[in-house]
Image (cartoon, rainbow, N blue to C red):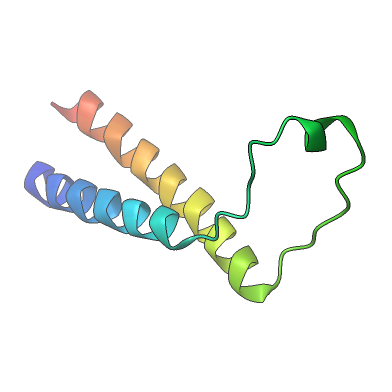
Length: 72
């Protein structure tokens, strides 16, 4: 069981890294834009799916890590 969970940990980490790297990075570090109204942005279906997938896979990754810690 522990071997299966270790393999799942590796696969989850690879999936999490891939999903984070795919996401759009339209963020600027311009300090002048921080003071004013930046406008409202809505996530479209693709961005929303990647955002939700990141949260879900991250949660499963943390849960798997905690279970591995308890079981070993």
